[in-house]
Length: 265
Length: 288
Image: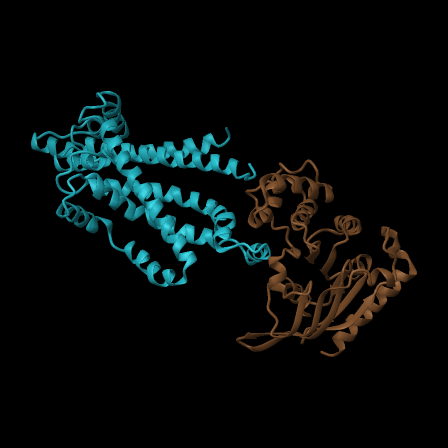
Protein backbone atom coordinates (compact mmCIF):
# COMPACT_ATOMS: atom_id res chain seq x y z
CA UNK A 1 0.00 0.00 0.00
CA UNK A 2 2.91 2.31 0.77
CA UNK A 3 3.70 3.00 -2.89
CA UNK A 4 0.18 4.15 -3.78
CA UNK A 5 0.27 6.56 -0.87
CA UNK A 6 3.35 8.37 -2.06
CA UNK A 7 2.31 8.50 -5.68
CA UNK A 8 0.93 11.98 -5.99
CA UNK A 9 1.96 14.06 -3.02
CA UNK A 10 -0.24 16.17 -0.77
CA UNK A 11 -3.46 17.50 -2.27
CA UNK A 12 -5.08 18.73 0.90
CA UNK A 13 -3.07 19.87 3.88
CA UNK A 14 -4.48 21.05 7.20
CA UNK A 15 -2.21 22.34 9.93
CA UNK A 16 -3.49 23.29 13.36
CA UNK A 17 -6.91 24.01 11.91
CA UNK A 18 -9.37 25.71 14.29
CA UNK A 19 -12.98 26.71 13.69
CA UNK A 20 -15.03 28.34 16.40
CA UNK A 21 -18.64 29.38 15.80
CA UNK A 22 -19.91 32.28 17.91
CA UNK A 23 -23.42 31.39 18.99
CA UNK A 24 -25.92 32.86 21.45
CA UNK A 25 -24.88 30.19 23.95
CA UNK A 26 -21.20 31.09 23.68
CA UNK A 27 -18.47 29.82 21.39
CA UNK A 28 -18.76 26.34 19.86
CA UNK A 29 -15.50 24.65 18.97
CA UNK A 30 -16.41 22.88 15.77
CA UNK A 31 -12.79 22.02 14.99
CA UNK A 32 -9.71 22.19 17.17
CA UNK A 33 -6.12 21.64 16.11
CA UNK A 34 -6.88 19.46 13.12
CA UNK A 35 -3.76 18.22 11.31
CA UNK A 36 -4.21 16.08 8.25
CA UNK A 37 -2.60 15.43 4.91
CA UNK A 38 -4.55 13.90 2.05
CA UNK A 39 -2.46 12.64 -0.85
CA UNK A 40 -3.40 12.51 -4.50
CA UNK A 41 -5.54 9.49 -5.27
CA UNK A 42 -6.43 8.86 -1.62
CA UNK A 43 -9.87 7.72 -0.63
CA UNK A 44 -10.28 9.28 2.80
CA UNK A 45 -13.27 8.63 5.04
CA UNK A 46 -14.21 10.83 7.94
CA UNK A 47 -16.14 8.99 10.61
CA UNK A 48 -17.44 10.03 13.99
CA UNK A 49 -20.58 10.86 15.93
CA UNK A 50 -22.72 13.94 15.22
CA UNK A 51 -20.97 17.17 16.08
CA UNK A 52 -17.44 15.79 15.66
CA UNK A 53 -16.78 18.26 12.85
CA UNK A 54 -16.40 15.78 9.99
CA UNK A 55 -18.85 17.63 7.76
CA UNK A 56 -17.46 20.97 8.94
CA UNK A 57 -13.97 19.90 7.90
CA UNK A 58 -15.23 18.87 4.47
CA UNK A 59 -17.02 22.21 4.17
CA UNK A 60 -13.77 24.00 5.07
CA UNK A 61 -12.01 22.21 2.23
CA UNK A 62 -14.82 23.33 -0.09
CA UNK A 63 -14.60 26.92 1.20
CA UNK A 64 -18.18 26.74 2.46
CA UNK A 65 -16.86 27.45 5.97
CA UNK A 66 -13.82 29.51 6.83
CA UNK A 67 -11.44 28.35 9.58
CA UNK A 68 -10.72 30.76 12.41
CA UNK A 69 -7.20 29.48 12.91
CA UNK A 70 -4.45 27.35 11.37
CA UNK A 71 -3.77 26.81 7.69
CA UNK A 72 -5.58 24.79 5.05
CA UNK A 73 -4.38 24.38 1.50
CA UNK A 74 -5.98 22.61 -1.46
CA UNK A 75 -3.57 21.92 -4.32
CA UNK A 76 -1.24 24.37 -2.62
CA UNK A 77 -3.85 27.15 -2.79
CA UNK A 78 -6.40 28.54 -0.37
CA UNK A 79 -9.77 26.74 -0.58
CA UNK A 80 -11.34 29.84 -2.17
CA UNK A 81 -8.73 29.93 -4.92
CA UNK A 82 -9.04 26.18 -5.39
CA UNK A 83 -12.77 26.59 -5.97
CA UNK A 84 -12.13 29.13 -8.69
CA UNK A 85 -9.79 26.61 -10.32
CA UNK A 86 -12.63 24.04 -10.18
CA UNK A 87 -10.53 21.82 -7.94
CA UNK A 88 -13.40 19.89 -6.40
CA UNK A 89 -16.91 18.58 -6.91
CA UNK A 90 -19.18 18.36 -3.89
CA UNK A 91 -21.85 15.71 -3.40
CA UNK A 92 -24.40 16.42 -0.68
CA UNK A 93 -26.46 14.01 1.38
CA UNK A 94 -29.55 14.70 -0.72
CA UNK A 95 -29.17 14.39 -4.48
CA UNK A 96 -30.56 17.92 -4.78
CA UNK A 97 -31.45 17.56 -8.44
CA UNK A 98 -33.62 20.36 -9.81
CA UNK A 99 -37.05 18.85 -10.49
CA UNK A 100 -37.59 21.21 -13.43
CA UNK A 101 -34.47 20.01 -15.24
CA UNK A 102 -33.91 16.65 -16.88
CA UNK A 103 -31.04 14.49 -15.64
CA UNK A 104 -28.89 15.81 -18.50
CA UNK A 105 -30.05 19.34 -17.69
CA UNK A 106 -29.06 18.87 -14.06
CA UNK A 107 -25.59 17.67 -15.02
CA UNK A 108 -25.25 20.69 -17.31
CA UNK A 109 -26.02 23.07 -14.45
CA UNK A 110 -22.43 23.49 -13.21
CA UNK A 111 -21.19 23.46 -16.82
CA UNK A 112 -23.53 26.33 -17.75
CA UNK A 113 -22.42 28.29 -14.71
CA UNK A 114 -18.77 27.71 -15.50
CA UNK A 115 -19.31 28.68 -19.13
CA UNK A 116 -18.53 25.49 -21.04
CA UNK A 117 -19.55 25.51 -24.71
CA UNK A 118 -22.79 23.80 -25.72
CA UNK A 119 -21.05 21.03 -27.65
CA UNK A 120 -18.64 20.43 -24.79
CA UNK A 121 -21.58 20.25 -22.36
CA UNK A 122 -23.28 17.54 -24.41
CA UNK A 123 -20.11 15.49 -24.66
CA UNK A 124 -19.41 15.75 -20.96
CA UNK A 125 -22.97 14.78 -20.02
CA UNK A 126 -22.69 11.65 -22.15
CA UNK A 127 -19.35 10.75 -20.64
CA UNK A 128 -20.29 11.15 -16.96
CA UNK A 129 -23.65 9.45 -17.44
CA UNK A 130 -21.76 6.47 -18.74
CA UNK A 131 -19.34 6.70 -15.83
CA UNK A 132 -22.18 6.33 -13.29
CA UNK A 133 -24.00 3.80 -15.50
CA UNK A 134 -26.95 6.05 -16.29
CA UNK A 135 -26.53 6.18 -20.07
CA UNK A 136 -29.87 6.69 -21.75
CA UNK A 137 -31.42 8.37 -18.71
CA UNK A 138 -30.42 11.89 -19.72
CA UNK A 139 -33.88 12.86 -20.94
CA UNK A 140 -35.68 11.60 -17.81
CA UNK A 141 -36.81 13.90 -15.06
CA UNK A 142 -35.52 13.26 -11.52
CA UNK A 143 -38.86 11.95 -10.22
CA UNK A 144 -38.71 9.18 -12.81
CA UNK A 145 -35.54 7.79 -11.17
CA UNK A 146 -35.10 5.84 -7.93
CA UNK A 147 -33.30 7.40 -4.97
CA UNK A 148 -30.10 5.51 -5.74
CA UNK A 149 -30.16 6.55 -9.38
CA UNK A 150 -30.76 10.16 -8.37
CA UNK A 151 -27.71 10.06 -6.12
CA UNK A 152 -25.67 8.59 -8.97
CA UNK A 153 -26.84 11.44 -11.17
CA UNK A 154 -25.69 13.90 -8.53
CA UNK A 155 -22.27 12.21 -8.50
CA UNK A 156 -22.20 12.53 -12.28
CA UNK A 157 -22.96 16.21 -11.90
CA UNK A 158 -20.01 16.61 -9.51
CA UNK A 159 -17.74 14.77 -11.98
CA UNK A 160 -18.83 16.71 -15.06
CA UNK A 161 -16.33 19.55 -14.81
CA UNK A 162 -13.30 17.33 -14.24
CA UNK A 163 -12.48 18.28 -10.68
CA UNK A 164 -9.63 16.19 -9.28
CA UNK A 165 -11.13 16.11 -5.81
CA UNK A 166 -14.53 14.68 -5.01
CA UNK A 167 -15.96 15.71 -1.64
CA UNK A 168 -18.90 13.59 -0.52
CA UNK A 169 -20.97 14.39 2.56
CA UNK A 170 -22.83 11.22 3.54
CA UNK A 171 -23.94 10.75 -0.06
CA UNK A 172 -25.61 7.41 0.58
CA UNK A 173 -26.91 8.18 4.07
CA UNK A 174 -30.53 8.36 2.99
CA UNK A 175 -30.51 5.12 0.99
CA UNK A 176 -31.29 1.59 2.12
CA UNK A 177 -28.45 -0.81 2.76
CA UNK A 178 -28.81 -2.93 -0.36
CA UNK A 179 -28.69 0.09 -2.66
CA UNK A 180 -25.90 1.49 -0.57
CA UNK A 181 -23.75 -1.64 -0.99
CA UNK A 182 -24.10 -1.45 -4.74
CA UNK A 183 -23.32 2.22 -4.89
CA UNK A 184 -20.27 1.69 -2.68
CA UNK A 185 -19.02 -0.95 -5.08
CA UNK A 186 -19.65 1.33 -8.04
CA UNK A 187 -17.96 4.22 -6.31
CA UNK A 188 -14.81 2.14 -5.85
CA UNK A 189 -14.85 1.24 -9.53
CA UNK A 190 -15.32 4.87 -10.43
CA UNK A 191 -12.46 5.85 -8.16
CA UNK A 192 -10.21 3.21 -9.74
CA UNK A 193 -11.10 4.40 -13.25
CA UNK A 194 -10.73 8.12 -12.63
CA UNK A 195 -7.98 8.28 -10.01
CA UNK A 196 -9.75 11.08 -8.17
CA UNK A 197 -8.95 12.06 -4.62
CA UNK A 198 -12.07 11.45 -2.55
CA UNK A 199 -13.09 12.86 0.82
CA UNK A 200 -16.05 10.92 2.16
CA UNK A 201 -18.07 11.66 5.30
CA UNK A 202 -20.00 8.74 6.77
CA UNK A 203 -21.67 7.40 9.90
CA UNK A 204 -21.13 3.79 8.93
CA UNK A 205 -18.05 1.86 10.06
CA UNK A 206 -18.34 -0.90 7.39
CA UNK A 207 -18.78 1.73 4.68
CA UNK A 208 -15.69 3.63 5.85
CA UNK A 209 -13.56 0.49 6.05
CA UNK A 210 -14.77 -0.90 2.76
CA UNK A 211 -14.14 2.27 0.76
CA UNK A 212 -11.12 3.95 2.26
CA UNK A 213 -7.37 3.95 1.90
CA UNK A 214 -7.32 6.22 4.94
CA UNK A 215 -9.88 6.42 7.75
CA UNK A 216 -10.01 9.54 9.89
CA UNK A 217 -11.75 8.94 13.22
CA UNK A 218 -13.09 12.09 14.83
CA UNK A 219 -14.77 12.94 18.12
CA UNK A 220 -16.88 15.87 19.30
CA UNK A 221 -16.66 18.77 21.78
CA UNK A 222 -14.31 20.04 20.54
CA UNK A 223 -14.29 18.48 17.08
CA UNK A 224 -10.90 16.83 16.60
CA UNK A 225 -9.11 13.88 15.03
CA UNK A 226 -8.51 10.98 17.41
CA UNK A 227 -7.08 8.41 15.01
CA UNK A 228 -5.92 8.11 11.41
CA UNK A 229 -5.88 4.58 10.07
CA UNK A 230 -4.04 3.65 6.87
CA UNK A 231 -5.95 0.75 5.41
CA UNK A 232 -3.89 -2.36 4.52
CA UNK A 233 -6.69 -3.66 2.26
CA UNK A 234 -5.83 -4.11 -1.43
CA UNK A 235 -7.17 -1.56 -3.89
CA UNK A 236 -9.33 -4.16 -5.61
CA UNK A 237 -12.13 -4.92 -3.17
CA UNK A 238 -14.99 -7.29 -3.83
CA UNK A 239 -17.96 -6.93 -1.48
CA UNK A 240 -17.09 -10.15 0.38
CA UNK A 241 -13.80 -8.64 1.54
CA UNK A 242 -15.94 -7.48 4.43
CA UNK A 243 -15.83 -10.98 5.87
CA UNK A 244 -12.02 -11.11 5.89
CA UNK A 245 -9.98 -10.88 9.09
CA UNK A 246 -8.11 -7.76 7.93
CA UNK A 247 -11.42 -5.98 7.39
CA UNK A 248 -12.73 -6.99 10.79
CA UNK A 249 -9.51 -5.84 12.45
CA UNK A 250 -9.71 -2.37 10.93
CA UNK A 251 -13.38 -2.09 11.80
CA UNK A 252 -12.47 -3.02 15.36
CA UNK A 253 -9.80 -0.33 15.51
CA UNK A 254 -12.25 2.27 14.18
CA UNK A 255 -14.77 1.25 16.82
CA UNK A 256 -12.13 1.51 19.54
CA UNK A 257 -11.19 4.96 18.28
CA UNK A 258 -14.82 6.10 18.37
CA UNK A 259 -15.25 4.73 21.88
CA UNK A 260 -12.06 6.41 23.11
CA UNK A 261 -13.36 9.72 21.80
CA UNK A 262 -16.50 9.31 23.85
CA UNK A 263 -14.75 8.56 27.16
CA UNK A 264 -13.46 12.14 27.11
CA UNK A 265 -16.99 13.53 27.43
CA UNK B 1 -67.69 10.35 -12.92
CA UNK B 2 -68.07 9.52 -9.25
CA UNK B 3 -67.35 13.15 -8.46
CA UNK B 4 -70.38 14.40 -10.42
CA UNK B 5 -72.90 13.28 -7.84
CA UNK B 6 -71.69 15.36 -4.85
CA UNK B 7 -71.14 18.39 -7.09
CA UNK B 8 -74.66 18.15 -8.49
CA UNK B 9 -76.10 17.55 -5.01
CA UNK B 10 -74.55 20.74 -3.66
CA UNK B 11 -75.65 22.67 -6.76
CA UNK B 12 -79.23 21.38 -6.39
CA UNK B 13 -79.23 22.31 -2.71
CA UNK B 14 -78.05 25.84 -3.48
CA UNK B 15 -80.71 26.29 -6.16
CA UNK B 16 -83.37 24.97 -3.78
CA UNK B 17 -82.29 27.39 -1.03
CA UNK B 18 -82.29 30.21 -3.57
CA UNK B 19 -85.83 29.40 -4.71
CA UNK B 20 -87.03 29.19 -1.11
CA UNK B 21 -85.41 32.54 -0.32
CA UNK B 22 -86.99 34.08 -3.45
CA UNK B 23 -90.43 32.94 -2.42
CA UNK B 24 -89.94 34.20 1.10
CA UNK B 25 -88.55 37.63 0.13
CA UNK B 26 -90.82 38.30 -2.83
CA UNK B 27 -93.95 37.19 -0.96
CA UNK B 28 -94.02 40.46 0.98
CA UNK B 29 -94.78 42.36 -2.19
CA UNK B 30 -97.58 39.94 -3.18
CA UNK B 31 -99.18 40.24 0.27
CA UNK B 32 -98.93 44.05 0.15
CA UNK B 33 -100.61 44.11 -3.26
CA UNK B 34 -103.40 41.84 -2.07
CA UNK B 35 -103.95 43.91 1.07
CA UNK B 36 -104.19 47.09 -0.92
CA UNK B 37 -106.76 45.46 -3.17
CA UNK B 38 -108.63 44.24 -0.13
CA UNK B 39 -108.18 40.63 -1.05
CA UNK B 40 -106.69 37.76 0.83
CA UNK B 41 -104.37 35.33 -0.88
CA UNK B 42 -103.42 31.76 -0.12
CA UNK B 43 -99.85 30.45 -0.32
CA UNK B 44 -100.84 28.47 -3.38
CA UNK B 45 -101.60 31.76 -5.10
CA UNK B 46 -98.57 33.57 -3.67
CA UNK B 47 -95.85 31.18 -4.81
CA UNK B 48 -96.42 31.49 -8.58
CA UNK B 49 -96.53 35.27 -8.22
CA UNK B 50 -93.15 35.39 -6.54
CA UNK B 51 -91.59 33.69 -9.55
CA UNK B 52 -92.30 36.26 -12.23
CA UNK B 53 -92.16 39.77 -10.79
CA UNK B 54 -90.70 42.60 -12.83
CA UNK B 55 -88.76 44.00 -9.88
CA UNK B 56 -88.31 41.18 -7.39
CA UNK B 57 -86.35 41.70 -4.18
CA UNK B 58 -84.56 38.46 -4.91
CA UNK B 59 -85.08 37.19 -8.45
CA UNK B 60 -85.38 33.38 -8.65
CA UNK B 61 -82.71 31.48 -10.63
CA UNK B 62 -84.71 31.05 -13.83
CA UNK B 63 -85.36 34.80 -14.08
CA UNK B 64 -81.68 35.56 -13.64
CA UNK B 65 -80.81 32.87 -16.16
CA UNK B 66 -83.27 34.30 -18.67
CA UNK B 67 -81.94 37.83 -18.21
CA UNK B 68 -78.39 36.55 -18.50
CA UNK B 69 -79.25 34.70 -21.71
CA UNK B 70 -80.96 37.79 -23.09
CA UNK B 71 -77.90 39.87 -22.25
CA UNK B 72 -75.42 37.43 -23.73
CA UNK B 73 -77.16 35.90 -26.75
CA UNK B 74 -80.12 38.22 -27.35
CA UNK B 75 -78.14 41.31 -28.34
CA UNK B 76 -75.58 42.33 -30.89
CA UNK B 77 -72.17 42.32 -29.26
CA UNK B 78 -71.82 46.00 -30.03
CA UNK B 79 -75.09 46.84 -28.28
CA UNK B 80 -74.89 48.80 -25.05
CA UNK B 81 -77.25 46.24 -23.55
CA UNK B 82 -75.07 43.27 -24.41
CA UNK B 83 -73.37 41.65 -21.45
CA UNK B 84 -70.69 40.41 -23.82
CA UNK B 85 -69.90 44.00 -24.72
CA UNK B 86 -69.67 45.07 -21.09
CA UNK B 87 -67.89 41.85 -20.17
CA UNK B 88 -65.19 42.50 -22.77
CA UNK B 89 -64.66 46.00 -21.40
CA UNK B 90 -64.28 44.59 -17.90
CA UNK B 91 -62.02 41.83 -19.22
CA UNK B 92 -59.75 44.38 -20.88
CA UNK B 93 -59.47 46.38 -17.67
CA UNK B 94 -58.83 43.19 -15.71
CA UNK B 95 -56.06 42.06 -18.05
CA UNK B 96 -54.34 45.44 -17.91
CA UNK B 97 -54.56 45.53 -14.12
CA UNK B 98 -53.51 41.90 -13.85
CA UNK B 99 -50.46 42.45 -16.04
CA UNK B 100 -49.53 45.59 -14.12
CA UNK B 101 -50.05 43.75 -10.83
CA UNK B 102 -47.83 40.85 -11.90
CA UNK B 103 -45.05 43.16 -13.04
CA UNK B 104 -45.28 45.20 -9.85
CA UNK B 105 -45.55 42.17 -7.55
CA UNK B 106 -42.68 40.29 -9.16
CA UNK B 107 -40.44 43.36 -9.34
CA UNK B 108 -41.01 44.18 -5.67
CA UNK B 109 -40.50 40.55 -4.63
CA UNK B 110 -37.23 40.31 -6.56
CA UNK B 111 -35.87 43.48 -5.00
CA UNK B 112 -37.03 42.44 -1.53
CA UNK B 113 -35.29 39.07 -1.81
CA UNK B 114 -32.18 40.70 -3.27
CA UNK B 115 -31.84 43.66 -0.92
CA UNK B 116 -32.58 43.35 2.73
CA UNK B 117 -33.27 47.08 3.11
CA UNK B 118 -36.14 46.72 0.66
CA UNK B 119 -37.81 44.20 2.92
CA UNK B 120 -37.65 46.56 5.90
CA UNK B 121 -38.66 49.65 3.94
CA UNK B 122 -41.18 48.40 1.37
CA UNK B 123 -42.88 45.33 2.81
CA UNK B 124 -44.72 47.19 5.64
CA UNK B 125 -46.19 49.63 3.10
CA UNK B 126 -47.30 46.82 0.87
CA UNK B 127 -49.15 45.28 3.79
CA UNK B 128 -50.64 48.60 4.91
CA UNK B 129 -51.82 49.24 1.34
CA UNK B 130 -54.05 46.20 1.56
CA UNK B 131 -55.73 47.33 4.78
CA UNK B 132 -57.27 50.38 3.10
CA UNK B 133 -60.73 49.57 1.72
CA UNK B 134 -60.55 49.73 -2.03
CA UNK B 135 -64.04 51.31 -2.27
CA UNK B 136 -62.67 54.30 -0.37
CA UNK B 137 -59.57 54.50 -2.49
CA UNK B 138 -61.11 53.93 -5.93
CA UNK B 139 -62.87 57.31 -6.25
CA UNK B 140 -59.68 59.06 -5.13
CA UNK B 141 -57.64 57.29 -7.79
CA UNK B 142 -60.27 58.22 -10.39
CA UNK B 143 -60.34 61.88 -9.36
CA UNK B 144 -56.57 62.04 -9.15
CA UNK B 145 -55.99 60.60 -12.61
CA UNK B 146 -58.63 62.98 -13.95
CA UNK B 147 -56.76 65.89 -12.35
CA UNK B 148 -53.58 64.73 -13.97
CA UNK B 149 -55.27 65.04 -17.33
CA UNK B 150 -55.81 61.36 -18.05
CA UNK B 151 -59.15 61.29 -19.83
CA UNK B 152 -59.34 57.60 -20.40
CA UNK B 153 -61.10 55.62 -17.71
CA UNK B 154 -58.94 52.62 -18.58
CA UNK B 155 -55.88 53.88 -16.74
CA UNK B 156 -57.39 54.48 -13.29
CA UNK B 157 -59.31 51.20 -13.63
CA UNK B 158 -56.10 49.32 -14.35
CA UNK B 159 -54.39 51.03 -11.41
CA UNK B 160 -57.18 50.05 -9.01
CA UNK B 161 -57.11 46.54 -10.39
CA UNK B 162 -53.32 46.30 -10.07
CA UNK B 163 -53.54 47.71 -6.56
CA UNK B 164 -55.49 44.63 -5.52
CA UNK B 165 -53.70 42.04 -7.63
CA UNK B 166 -50.03 42.85 -6.97
CA UNK B 167 -50.19 41.83 -3.33
CA UNK B 168 -50.80 38.07 -3.60
CA UNK B 169 -48.12 37.91 -6.29
CA UNK B 170 -45.68 39.82 -4.09
CA UNK B 171 -46.22 37.66 -1.01
CA UNK B 172 -46.03 34.36 -2.91
CA UNK B 173 -43.01 35.37 -4.95
CA UNK B 174 -41.06 36.45 -1.86
CA UNK B 175 -41.76 33.04 -0.38
CA UNK B 176 -41.05 31.25 -3.66
CA UNK B 177 -37.77 33.04 -4.35
CA UNK B 178 -36.67 32.13 -0.84
CA UNK B 179 -37.78 28.50 -1.12
CA UNK B 180 -34.38 27.01 -2.13
CA UNK B 181 -32.76 25.50 0.96
CA UNK B 182 -29.26 26.04 2.29
CA UNK B 183 -27.97 22.87 0.65
CA UNK B 184 -29.04 24.04 -2.81
CA UNK B 185 -27.46 27.44 -2.22
CA UNK B 186 -24.23 25.84 -0.95
CA UNK B 187 -24.17 23.63 -3.99
CA UNK B 188 -24.29 26.63 -6.34
CA UNK B 189 -21.58 28.25 -4.24
CA UNK B 190 -19.30 25.27 -4.89
CA UNK B 191 -19.76 25.95 -8.62
CA UNK B 192 -18.76 29.55 -8.01
CA UNK B 193 -22.16 30.81 -9.21
CA UNK B 194 -22.82 34.56 -9.10
CA UNK B 195 -25.89 36.19 -7.49
CA UNK B 196 -27.41 36.57 -10.95
CA UNK B 197 -26.82 32.94 -11.89
CA UNK B 198 -28.30 31.81 -8.56
CA UNK B 199 -31.37 33.90 -9.32
CA UNK B 200 -31.94 32.73 -12.88
CA UNK B 201 -30.95 29.08 -12.46
CA UNK B 202 -32.36 28.34 -9.02
CA UNK B 203 -34.49 30.98 -7.32
CA UNK B 204 -36.72 31.90 -10.25
CA UNK B 205 -37.58 28.38 -11.44
CA UNK B 206 -38.06 27.27 -7.82
CA UNK B 207 -40.61 30.05 -7.31
CA UNK B 208 -42.85 29.02 -10.23
CA UNK B 209 -45.30 26.84 -8.24
CA UNK B 210 -45.76 29.75 -5.81
CA UNK B 211 -46.19 32.13 -8.73
CA UNK B 212 -49.00 30.16 -10.34
CA UNK B 213 -50.78 29.61 -7.04
CA UNK B 214 -50.75 33.37 -6.53
CA UNK B 215 -51.98 34.07 -10.07
CA UNK B 216 -55.32 32.40 -9.35
CA UNK B 217 -55.88 34.73 -6.40
CA UNK B 218 -54.48 37.72 -8.27
CA UNK B 219 -56.67 37.32 -11.36
CA UNK B 220 -59.81 37.21 -9.20
CA UNK B 221 -58.58 40.26 -7.27
CA UNK B 222 -57.87 42.08 -10.54
CA UNK B 223 -61.44 41.44 -11.70
CA UNK B 224 -62.88 42.74 -8.43
CA UNK B 225 -60.63 45.80 -8.68
CA UNK B 226 -61.81 46.50 -12.21
CA UNK B 227 -65.46 46.19 -11.23
CA UNK B 228 -64.96 48.48 -8.25
CA UNK B 229 -63.21 50.90 -10.61
CA UNK B 230 -66.31 50.87 -12.83
CA UNK B 231 -68.70 51.59 -10.00
CA UNK B 232 -68.02 55.23 -9.09
CA UNK B 233 -69.87 58.14 -10.60
CA UNK B 234 -70.41 58.45 -14.26
CA UNK B 235 -69.34 55.00 -15.36
CA UNK B 236 -71.26 53.80 -18.36
CA UNK B 237 -69.35 50.78 -19.54
CA UNK B 238 -68.32 47.50 -17.96
CA UNK B 239 -70.03 44.97 -15.74
CA UNK B 240 -69.51 47.21 -12.69
CA UNK B 241 -71.36 50.04 -14.37
CA UNK B 242 -74.10 47.60 -15.38
CA UNK B 243 -74.53 46.55 -11.75
CA UNK B 244 -74.68 50.16 -10.66
CA UNK B 245 -77.28 51.03 -13.32
CA UNK B 246 -79.38 48.05 -12.28
CA UNK B 247 -79.29 49.11 -8.68
CA UNK B 248 -79.86 52.84 -9.30
CA UNK B 249 -82.77 52.37 -11.67
CA UNK B 250 -84.41 49.68 -9.59
CA UNK B 251 -83.80 46.91 -12.12
CA UNK B 252 -82.65 44.02 -9.96
CA UNK B 253 -82.65 41.65 -12.91
CA UNK B 254 -80.02 43.73 -14.72
CA UNK B 255 -77.94 43.85 -11.56
CA UNK B 256 -78.16 40.13 -10.97
CA UNK B 257 -77.42 39.27 -14.56
CA UNK B 258 -74.31 41.49 -14.47
CA UNK B 259 -73.31 39.89 -11.18
CA UNK B 260 -73.50 36.44 -12.67
CA UNK B 261 -71.75 37.55 -15.83
CA UNK B 262 -68.91 38.75 -13.59
CA UNK B 263 -68.88 35.43 -11.75
CA UNK B 264 -68.74 33.50 -15.03
CA UNK B 265 -65.94 35.77 -16.25
CA UNK B 266 -64.03 35.11 -13.01
CA UNK B 267 -64.51 31.39 -13.49
CA UNK B 268 -63.21 31.54 -17.06
CA UNK B 269 -60.18 33.56 -15.97
CA UNK B 270 -59.30 31.09 -13.22
CA UNK B 271 -59.71 28.14 -15.58
CA UNK B 272 -57.45 29.91 -18.10
CA UNK B 273 -54.78 30.47 -15.45
CA UNK B 274 -55.11 26.81 -14.51
CA UNK B 275 -54.54 25.72 -18.12
CA UNK B 276 -51.46 27.95 -18.41
CA UNK B 277 -50.19 26.50 -15.13
CA UNK B 278 -50.63 22.96 -16.46
CA UNK B 279 -48.76 23.82 -19.65
CA UNK B 280 -45.93 25.33 -17.61
CA UNK B 281 -45.88 22.29 -15.33
CA UNK B 282 -45.52 19.96 -18.30
CA UNK B 283 -42.67 22.05 -19.62
CA UNK B 284 -40.99 22.05 -16.22
CA UNK B 285 -41.23 18.29 -15.84
CA UNK B 286 -43.64 18.25 -12.92
CA UNK B 287 -44.84 14.74 -12.15
CA UNK B 288 -48.26 14.41 -13.80
